[in-house]
Amino acid sequence: MARFLTRLFSPRRPAAPDRRIDPEEAAAALLVEAALVDGVYANLESDMISEILVTSFGMDAARADQVLEKGERLAESATDAHALTRHVKQLSEADRTRVVECLYRVSLADGEACKFEDAFIRHIASLLHVDDVRRAQARRRAEASQP
Image 1 (spheres, rainbow, N blue to C red):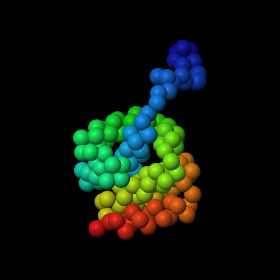
Image 2: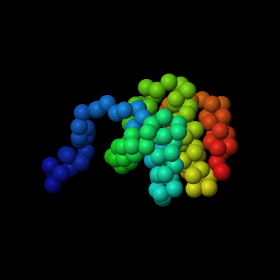
Image 3: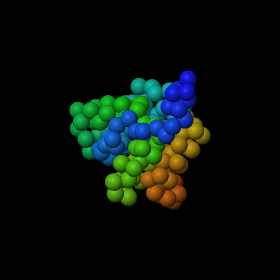
Image 4: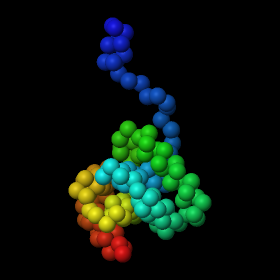
């Protein structure tokens, strides 16, 4: 019992050494996280993420599928958004703003705006150092691109 309590309250060591994650894969994981905020990860949202990877990130369909699969695994194993955003911050300012726009596109894919998704995107934009003006512009572009 004492050993259990000692392990329970002792500082945790990371399971594996910190590894480098491709910024595009980390961005895909954030897109998956945005889709999961409302508790439902529908085909519509995964299709939107695949489309975003092709159109906004300039990937071919095979690469987009591969990156989406890795992004889904990363999102599943990530402990918090900071673990992903620190890799995405390697991208340029314009690319980080584009990621925020893509987050809005994913959140709007199901046709409904959710206050929790909006709060998540605001948090991610802050972590990516995308200011409120650029974030609002990204949101307007995402809303304008919706059918």
